[in-house]
Image 1 (spheres, helix red, strand yellow):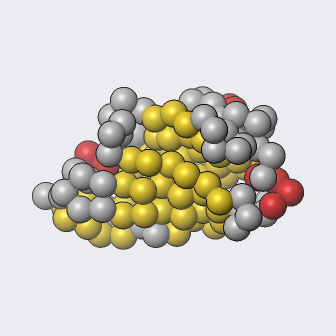
Image 2: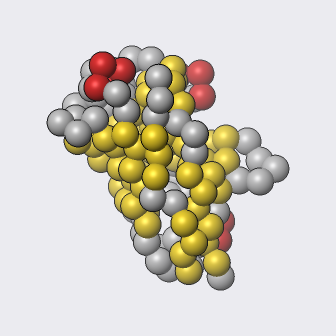
Length: 123
């Protein structure tokens, strides 16, 4: 299963970016989706998750109030709107399809992963 993440890039502190992740319909429309990130030398951490119908969302404390996850099942796409970015948000961002209908904050809760998109925030 191929997940295609896009939208990463270089942005100044305080700026915004919107990430997108396109997933095959059969593998995502009935499943929760999540975004994780991995900074150099660090573990991959949960950022945000969304249930299969968008009715439930969750965020890491570090991004609450700044990031918004959403999905469009008609387009088989999940988004991550990121605002008020700071250098600590610099990482490779990965999207993933959860094993069930709801998202998980754990890596093991996901079945398929995208290739990642790099977000760099300059100070």
